[in-house]
Amino acid sequence: MRKPPASTLRILSALGVAALVCAGLAFHTGTGTPSSFGIADIAALCPLGGLEAAIASRTVVPPMLIGLAVVVVITLLLGRAFCAWGCPVPLLKRAFRGKKASVPAPAKREAGVAGDSRMWVLGGALLSTAALGFPVFCLVCPVGLTFGTLVVVWRVFQFNEVTWSLAVFPALLVLELAVARKWCHRFCPLGALLSLISRGNRTFRPSAAAKACLHAAHGEGCRRCAEACPEGIDLHDSAASAPLNECVKCRACADACPAHAITFPFLPKKPALGSSAAELDLKEEQ
Image (cartoon, rainbow, N blue to C red; front, side, top):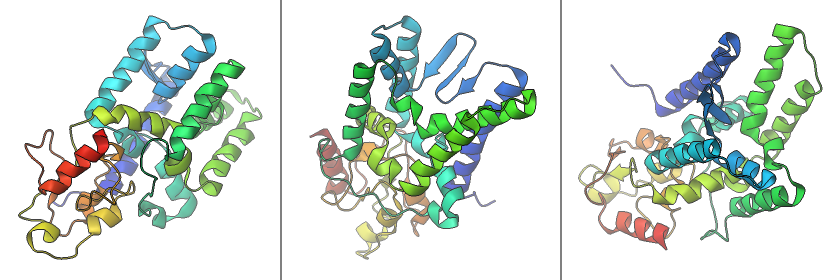
C-alpha cells in the first residue's frame, strides 16, 4: 500500500491538534491549546509565551520552568518540527491561497543571526514586553489567534456569547497571513526562537543516500530536493544552503526525490553526501 505524501500527513496532523483542542473544550479536559498544552496543573508552555510572561511579571515560577524545559527537550529531539506538523499557520495559508500554497518557494535568508529578520522581531518582542510589562507578541501571535478564534466561535455556539474577539481575531489573522505572506520566514519570532534552540538538534536530520542520489552518484543536475525545501536547505551545496537547524522535518524533500534517496534517520552514522553534509554542520556551528 502506497504511503500518503507528507503534505497530506501534515494537514492531518494540524487538524488533529485542532481536534484535540475541540475535545478539550467539549469535555472540559483542560488540555488547552498549543499555547499551553497540558493535563490539570501540568502544562507545557509555548516557549516564547513563557519567556514573555516571565519578563513581563519579572517572576520565574517552577511550573513555567518545567514547561519550558519540556519544550526545549522536544525541540532538541525533533528540531523545528512543530512549524510543519503542529502549527496551524501552514494549513491556514493553504486555505487562503489554495493548493499552490502547499509548494512554497524556498526561503532565502541572509547569513547569520544578525541577518535574519525573525531574530530582530524576536528581540523586539522581548524588549517591548520588558518595557510595557505584558506579553506583546502574544496579542498578535497567529497560533494564539487561530485557537483564540476557535475558542470564541465555540463559546458562541455553547453560550451564545458574542464578543468583539469574533471579528478582531480573524481580521488580524488575515492581515498577518494573507497580506504579510512571508510571515513564517521573515517575521515569526517563535520560529526564530525554535531555530536557536534547534541548533542543538542532531536527530532526524535529512540524509541523502550517496549511492541512490541522482546528483551524487550519477552526476545529474537534479535539484528537486532543494527546490522543494521551504526553508532553503540544499544538501548538495552548503554555500547556498540554509543551516540544518532550520529544517522543520516536513519531508517535502523526501517526497520530491525521484530516487527516494532521502531519509530522516534518528542518528546518521556519517554524512551521506561526503563533504557537503559535513560543511552544512560546520556552517551551522559557526
